[in-house]
Length: 450
Image (cartoon, rainbow, N blue to C red; front, side, top):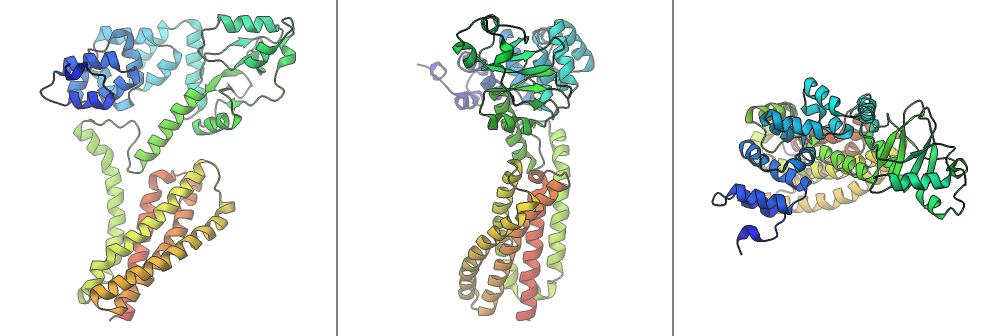
């Protein structure tokens, strides 16, 4: 049996496509048979742009739209730029309102108008409604695959509507009036248990249904759904009209995008970054972040320069400086990560920050004293100087304590100022712990050694 005849996972196909002696065309054809569209999307993203565009031509027409939707923005853009007119028209004809919203950033105004013209009137209304919301609002990504009934319908009418629907999973039907105003929901389980088929659905509506506003941020809407314990929730506009619903599938996609964006933001990138972005474009995207880090590095270097005299006379201090900085940096990062998570889950505010500070200071004091003693003793034996051991021990303990406080308040202050703590918190924290650590260490060295 040949290598490509075996059942392979995504990683296996990535390896085979990057092996020169293998025929990429044959391997990719086999991947199309074995992988689902989202996996094919990732497989294409793993290839350099030229190879990616060549393999795209092998994607069956019926899978092209699904594969495109599974790709990140930048990688998807490389496909669109190389796409011929006939394939592009095929894609535009296959889009529904939700898919058009997802791909809109990759399309020109002319292409969006063309795709819009292919939609039926209901899909056009859905697209226009979604386009009114910002990309950070849940209303833009509302799921329209739901069952609606009027308030004067009977239980049997609701059951018939369910049977006529083409929804894969439906946990409730939505009751709306002629103007589209949302009146409430009826759980499917209640309809199935109802013994009187002639009962009016008006009397079966849940008294206080949980709703999500179309202008709610994506994460807020996801958390509301999570806390509700249901599969879906209705999304309404400011006038109370039903926009659509948020489902667990949508929530999972939002959370995946959110955590990926947080991970990438820590190094100044976006979740849409392409592995094989053109060199100049990639360099330009990363230049700003490198410049910001350069400024903080110069600040730390300037701090060290203030103690040039003691460093020139006591070389041991220069050798030990990284220990002070790294201990403070790691301790602060642990606290920072905890607080950022707390901010994301709405568990941390300025009101409970002092209680958190006392908790983190207690942990920092315990670890600070213990590790300061270890580092002090090691330094004493290494450089045969009790004074240097004392200096670094005090500096490490002080830096860990400052790092704990900084880890609590830096993300809180950044969040209050409308900056993303996940994006800039680590840079600010590292600067604080470096400067405080160096000033404490070298300042004590100047006082006690010289």
